[in-house]
Image (cartoon, rainbow, N blue to C red; front, top):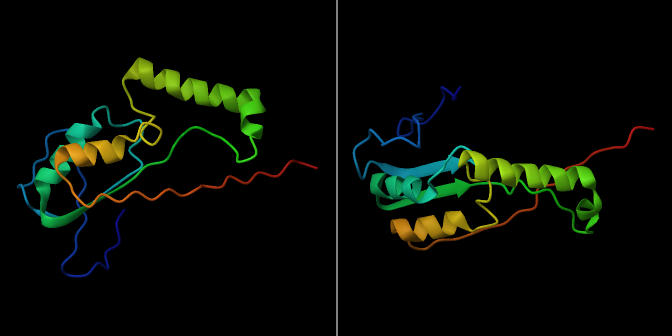
Length: 135
């Protein structure tokens, strides 16, 4: 699943991020977390574990997407299908305990600060979805 041509000072390790971490504290220089939306119920606990396992001066990078579909021109708000999509995601999160509002509720920044990280930087990017109507 991961490339075999990594530099000698780099390795990939896979584990269940929602369980207690099995690695020694202060082990990692860099921890990358991506697209765990809906899989993590307790982001503050996840970020605290990441902080405890990051070496002093190390970095955590977290990348999540907002699952709510919208358009700059407001057309998504008028679409019953997209409105239903957004409502179903929010409702499913409430029923299952999964968190789908990571971006909307600013959970990453809050969890990173609570865990003890400093120099927190947030960058927001629009993700385009292109669809072509059938002729």
